Length: 193
Image (cartoon, rainbow, N blue to C red):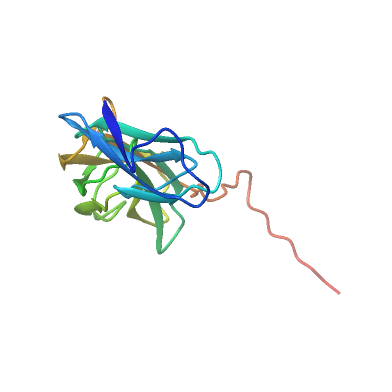
């Protein structure tokens, strides 16, 4: 999906020769990086021939970076906040800046009572592949079953969202238990010394 130009262009090189490699992507593709005896995304790439080298230029279709979001599970606690962390990942590093909007949405959990609603924009710099969305889960003493909320990705730029990966589910596990109950007859007992 591309070609490689070298300068000087010759079959072999003397030890110590400086060689410049230029990756030339086909239309609709871009260089995502070098591998083998070179790394990074510099283009052109200059190296010194101090041994035999094998270098590969990897090309991907423009816009072929794909986003996904993880699920998160937290135990709520009785007070304060605990953070539910949703990992947002890009399948292939890009030379372009990638942005994606996110927002929480109620499931069986409700914003303001069970978690703090949040929204924003994640920005991935060129080459960056991982970000985290943090959602505060609010502690309480209520006895209730596990509840869920969602974090939804939308309006991505320079990437696509993988099928089935537009939403991450946050599960809130509750650690509250019912107070002990007592059964039986009350009794009066006198204690004497």
